[in-house]
Image (cartoon, rainbow, N blue to C red; front, top):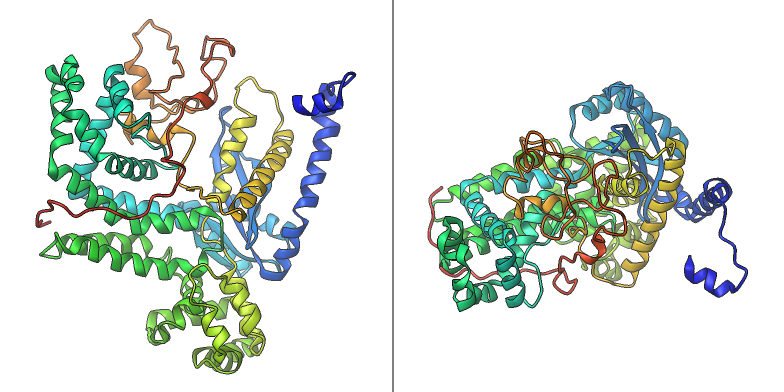
Length: 582
């Protein structure tokens, strides 16, 4: 804004409050709507997904968000305050159904939500009214459940607990923290993620990358001279952890087991390309990679079986539904490489069910797809037999929907279904990103913005941020979607007990009430300070904090190094691993 005023020159006048709140805001809303026209046109061509999510803001108001995703991006449509209403299946159904009418019933292919019971109740009601729509569970949420389940297994939990105790000890003392940053060349070992498990994986990865520097630190004279390193039990334990080969081999195993699923998490959460077409196939591939990863240390097979059991248990009825199976076999990246997938009973049952849903009640088109078009695709007849068609689907980064647009013209009924399914997202995380937009606009409890104005501000801010993100993606800038600038979900790696799942989280600081209570006496008023080591939430609530805005530390000055902003790939040694029996 200051730069624009400088270009204008002397005489520039700032806009009045009324202009900002009314005229200029409305102009921005209209400009944003024009920008989204391209996406609205794409809804009609390739279909779209409705994504909905509910949360509670800092004024304790219950907000329901609605976003629409198509193959060129996600757009925020509207929000609704539902503080006085129970979030029943009926309420969610009515809200989503109204939004379907707004977007256009013919444009909508699926609804994506998390796995909450009220969402599943809404799903049943939606199938009664609109039996031609799919209702999908959020892949991001489900894969996080898989990773958390694996992380709770004794073999992996022990490693995570040791790593967490190490980082908490280092970050708890100024001298150890300063020495660590000296040896790592000012790069932090904690890397905040968008979820608790993302923080765990990224921090383990960061520790392993800095293994040599941390080992050298533990053997240095400076480390030995720090009193609480030698005298405290936690200090002795931290030193032992750093020099113990079994710890580092355990970290290596954790990373090799977690990474195949984390790779899928990056794909579904990145919103760079439609993920539905690759989700099921990538999960099958991840299971095989995990079997290889644990094969060298799991002679009995018990560990591998337990991991696969967790994955399949979380996946069942969530990520193996007809829409996932149909997208899997319609993606030529998989079916051209392995035609036998059409012989799998589960896959074909899912495909048939998907056809019956997509062309619900239209038996002529169902017959056309199942008894004619599918055979031409399976047998690679006509355009499907062309060498250019076979070559065009060998690259993992190709677009299955565009491939069908090029080579599926001889089977238009199946082509329409394929393009619409293969253009879909599999995650509702794009809708959940609205939380940060709301908090950035509406951080103070005494803020008097109405829900309508907040919705307009979020509409402008979210859609413009998303547009910039797409531009960066096109410029091939490597950005890890799991990294976060907010350290809320990394608290457990910095503060003892901050990851206690039994404790409620205070909405402003991101700390648990248990931590806050332990810092206060009975007659003491808590005055939490923003600091790099505690890495509290980005906004300060004026009713709680005493320092002025001028005195407060700017969070932009608190850096968590992203290791040169690169997405780190696999490269974990298998040193010193012992056979295990789980």
